[in-house]
Structure formats: C-alpha cells, structure tokens
Amino acid sequence: MRIALVGPAHPYKGGGARHTTELAHRLAAAGHDVIIESWRAQYPSRLYPGQQLLDVPEGEPYPRAYRRLAWYRPDGWFAAGRRLRSADLVVFALLTPLQVPAYLTVLAGLHAPGARRRDRKHRPRTAVICHNVLPHERRPGDVALTRTLLAHVDTVLTHSPAQAAEARDLAPGTAVVTVPLPPHLPTTHFPERPGFPPPDTLHRPESERPSSPPPGQPPRPESGRLLFFGIVRPYKGLDVLLRALARAPEHLTLTVAGEFWGGTAETEALIAELGLAGRVTLRPGYLPANEIPALFAAADALVLPYREATASQNALLAFAHGVPVVTTTAGALADVVRDRVDGLTCAPGDVDDLARALTAISQPGTLEALRSGIRVVDPEPGWTAYLLALAAG
Image (cartoon, rainbow, N blue to C red; front, side, top):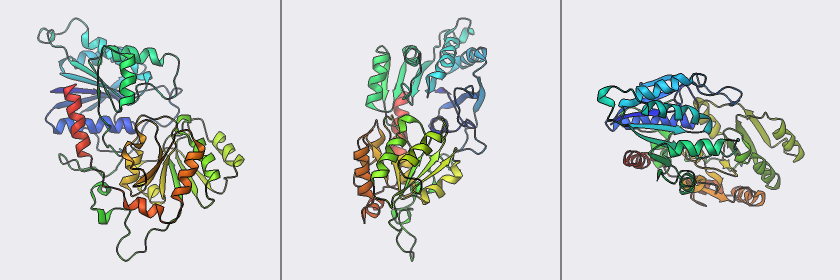
C-alpha cells in the first residue's frame, strides 16, 4: 500500500514523534510505500511553552519525512491533502486538538474536486491514531474539535478499551480499533534495518541486564532513590508523590527530571511546606536521550503517580534499564507492570496508598526482588499486532 503518515517526526521531541517515525520504519519494512508529512512549525510557542525541537534524534530518522506543514499556513494544509490523494491510506497522529484544524483541512484537500482523471475514482482510506482521544487538561472547544475529526475519518485507532469507549461516544458512526501501544523507546543507538532490535539493553540476556551486577562486583545496594521522569503537568500527580514521600521512610529520596511548563515555584513551595528540601532534587528541562541511561542508573525505582493516563512508555523505559516501577492504575499505565513482581501498583490520586507502596519498596530485599522479576522488553509482538490492526482497520 501507499501510506502517508501525517504527524510530528524528528526534529520534534517526545513519544508521539518517536512513534510516528518507528511506525513509518516498520510499515516500510513490511513492504509498504510510506512517507511522513510532518511539520516545520507545529504550534505557536504561547500554546506549547516547553521545548519543541531536538538537535540529536531520539531514534533513527525516517528518510522520507517531509517538513512542509506550518501552523501559520492553512493553504499548505490544503495543499498537503491534494498531494496525498494518490495514497491508499492516510493516517493522522492525534496528540492534541490543536492539530485538528490542520487535519480537517488536509482531509478537505484529499476529497476536494478537481483531481486528475486517474485519481477521480480513487479515495484514500483515512485513519486517526489517538494518542489521547481527549486531553487530560482540556480547553474550550477540545471536545467539539475532536468529535468533528473522528467523524470525518474511516477508522480510529486507540490504545486502550477506555479510550475506545471515549472515541465511540464522540463518533458512533466511525469504526474504532483498539491495540496496545508498542514500545518506541528513546535511543541514540540506531538499530540496523530490517531487524529492528531495540536499544541494546532491551535484548540482553537475563544474566547481562542492568539489574544484574557484572561478575565479581557486589550486588546493587538497597538505597531508595526514586525517580519522577517526564513533563510535569497537574494530571501526572507530582504533588501526590511529594505528599506520599513526606509520609514514607526518611531514607527515600526523589529526583524530578523533566520540563516544568508552569515553572518550578509551586513545586518548590510544596517541597518546603512538607519539609522535603533535603530529600528532593529538581532537574528541570528536557532530558536528551543520551543522558537517560545515567539518570536511570542513579535510580532504584521509577514512580508514575498519575491521576489520569492513557498509556506511557516510561515503565518500559525503566525496565529497559533494570529499574522497577511504582505506578498508579490510571488508564493503561499498569498494564505492563506486574504487581509485586517487577513493580508495585496503587490507586490514582490516593496519597495514603502511594505512601504504602513507597514504604513497601523501602523494605529490605524488596528492590532486589523486583529487579530480579524484570523481563526483557520484546517489541516484536506488539508491533506485529499494531501493523495488523492498522492495515485491517
């Protein structure tokens, strides 16, 4: 098939861009003719206050990615639709309703009259991949925009049953397909194609995983160094984690590494209020992929204290570095975590239950037991299912 993916790719940062890029590589390896129609300017800075672009790729760039879309050029959106008329499948990567006006205009270009004679009877199939059906923090118009987009495509692909139900409520006449989000972890070590091995740590035999010390070295100490990793937004529950940490054993410490969209002042005030100044380290700013291994090497457990969630790659990223996970059961976060095997789970938004989990992980022997339960992350089954779902939809 001739497939066009419309969405962010390198030099844009984050999981959405990595997913679009990896999807393009995998579809191409499966024999499809694939391009990415990406952005040279995706959002105005006032709507996206964090870092948008990267100097160093977080995965192997896709060679047929074209950066022709710009938020300030609606005529370019329509022109993109006209260019993509010869495709068999056009797939839109939806990360935020801010993208919807552009996507609707691309759709208008796809279906506008005036096509060349040989294209007049050809209508591309269209699909939306919903990384979030609706944002966790909504603006006026988000629901209406998303409903309109989903109603104008043939298929919606979601990553959890809860997200599928939300999509069906918004667009009952559109087919909805559900398949788990496959691994697409950040790395600066690009795999050889077409084998698609992930970063080295993901395919090491069990005896060589980071959770096991090299021969002749003492076991990794039971320390209690916790990590919160990623953009700091209210729905991710950092405040819940800080309050739980204040009730947990005092030897537990926390590093917060990620962008603070609203600045660090509110978090610093809460840290001071809770008396945690000596136990919490803030590391604001986007962390490039080449610094991630050292960050996880200095952590004993990753904590995902989210109030709400759809899916996240962070648990798999932790496992790739031999680090257990403490996560809430929000959305699909806990789907890859086996409670009391390679991590601990707790209720979302519940300070007491998270404090219980932190106390449990601080007990002698717990971290070592959880580390020994971490399995090698194999991306192949997930990606095979994902490509089948997208093609069948």
